[in-house]
Length: 82
Image (cartoon, rainbow, N blue to C red):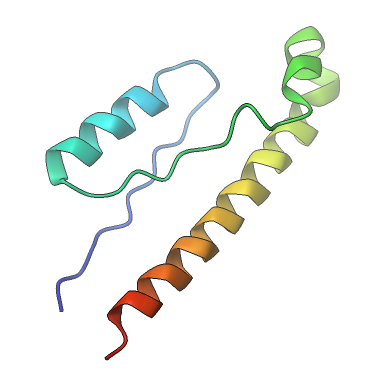
């Protein structure tokens, strides 16, 4: 069975993580698992008061990414079972 790499791209908001991730995914012909930015209820508050809302914003992203990864991992496991 061929092993699929799991590559992460991390960094501050607005530095081009998504653009870089797209280039990497295209180059290696692998799936791209993206953050769900539009659903983050703290993002608007974060831009108004970074010090007050940075923790909540990041925690939402972390939980969303972990949930997405778990769903993807389950799908991959189901696809590879005989």
